[in-house]
Length: 80
Image 1 (cartoon, one colour):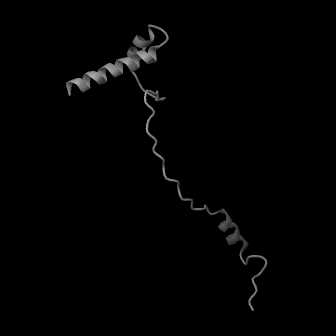
Image 2: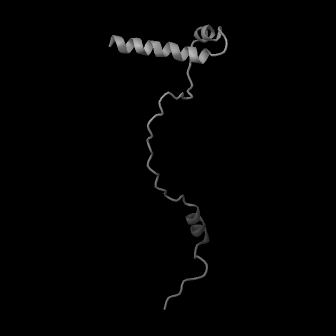
């Protein structure tokens, strides 16, 4: 009858085995449909003069940029 020792024969190997990263199965990404008419936070680089133009009229400059981009988008769709 074989008995196992109470302590591992090589403590270093036993310690390293404890710290090996566990292989976790990643949960599948859930794609949710975009909620209509919501705004998303983005980072956008604009030329400083373009930014100054939209900010010169005061608060609401982000909405004015959005409106301008929407107009350009609609014109592009109408042409195409």
